[in-house]
Length: 153
Image (tube, rainbow, N blue to C red; front, side):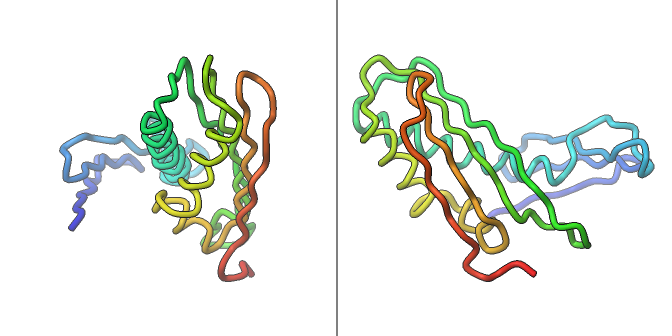
């Protein structure tokens, strides 16, 4: 079982803590009553996606004995215009710098993360099309696309 607690800190500020005991600060934009003192909850969703798939890819590459010099996942997304304003399209760019990784190894690691291991990706693809570009040492080596399993309205 996973646990979390979210505490109201006044205004539109909240602090959240997962079972691991780490605190995350959240706040709204000034135009909706916040003071911009923390990350927006929907931004945290994208951060969670990047962390989930990033940890998978690093773990898989390590098992392949691939040296990682640098690794980033850049994410941007579009939301539905009407409430609950779910994500409808998410674009990810995986960027690996490695002296010994092959394009096949990196594409396999990304594909395994998206199709099998990343639970955040599995949840988000229920409403969002997820398109991923994969770069190795600055060059685009492939694109993956996941479409919602339940069409977004």
